Length: 136
Ligand SMILES: O=C(CO)COP(=O)(O)O
Image (cartoon, rainbow, N blue to C red):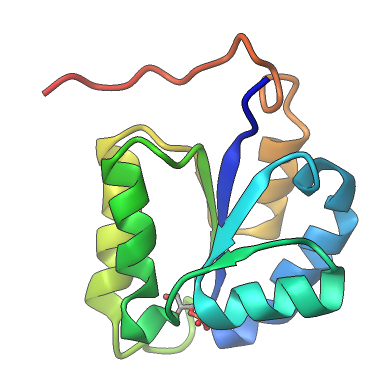
């Protein structure tokens, strides 16, 4: 069975929430390939002990690297705990990443509650389930 590839991303004030969530769902995440923006990935690897492929930090292009995976149909879900209370210098990159999830029908969870529901869905690890991909 092919493993799902998941991207984990959190803005600084949301990193504690992402780490707590990843720890809570470690058994599920262990069954997946994980990629992440640089700082988030380092924390997930060091503090939760999950292997993670790290891209550049978000402000340095990491969000765009994850967007490129989406455009190449190589990402199965995005867990992006973005910060609604603080401005990010790379907000256009953040918007672009979220936009690509809608373009390519990639599941995206932006809060711990949504992320809980996504990873515990019976469809999540089901080999039969594949989201419909749009044709352009
Ligand atoms: O800024 C980010 C996403 O937009 C996250 O980047 P880091 O994981 O490197 O902090």
